Image (cartoon, rainbow, N blue to C red; front, side):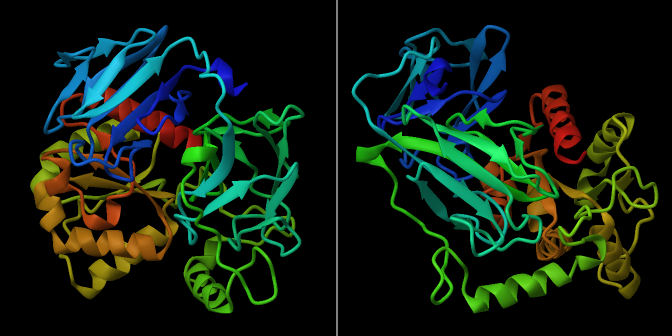
Length: 391
């Protein structure tokens, strides 16, 4: 149940349940915990799960991170009741998961990626179905979502929701694990469908609940989408429809293991070549097939554009190697723009420089892997994520 997990008590009095191996905290919307305060850096601190709890690390913040009033200079284990200070913001760590009494919570879904990223759906009904068909309670017109894909059911005591897959084509995953039976959802759980549809399950005190951001509606249909949005979505989907089927008995994507198609496309600046070679070696040793322009194709030429488009269309995901030089590279920008246009999933890796000078605006809402000071930890985390999400 939700109350059994360790959690953070945020300045808003919201409880953020800790369930993943890495939790990032900062002002940027790409973090798992977002604090809207000028004292908080874009990427300020992170919690890393260990065997018996979590450790706290500063992420190179401007004002620093304090634990019980002491500056955090190195990874430090958290104890129940510890106070974490990010500038003037205070967070309390509850390691035994005991809830604060007398707080009423609301539950909602926040769409993190895809055509409807940023929209929020309140969960209030005892039962709510989600799918592509207009008969669902929550309608999301995405090709990777089945007509009737999943259902959310409120617990009998009203404390939380369970999720169940409705025999969908592409399956339903929670934190990388396939949903084969109904299971309870925890605050912050990430629900994944297909290659790029991510939805987070969240809860907040009713008195501090965020403003709703409902899905767009089609005239005369509750929870649908406008015809303009539908045409725009179909136009983008047609760009990669060669690798996709509908849910009429077929898988949406080409099966894994096709040697003719790369698993990963690497986008990088040639100034970072000597670093990229190590990343390539580690990813290949982990079993991934990579596309990278070692052939030294000349950017901007017809053959370059042809090969880039071909590789991006066939790959499963894009690894963006970020540095100050890469942020200024017009060709890296074009590769990332093309990847977004094809709705490819992008995994940013921060290789060098501060986030503000290395992360392009188009990736500012993405969670990135920081390999500037802890390369082994970062590359291991990325490999584990890729093995789960690209299988």
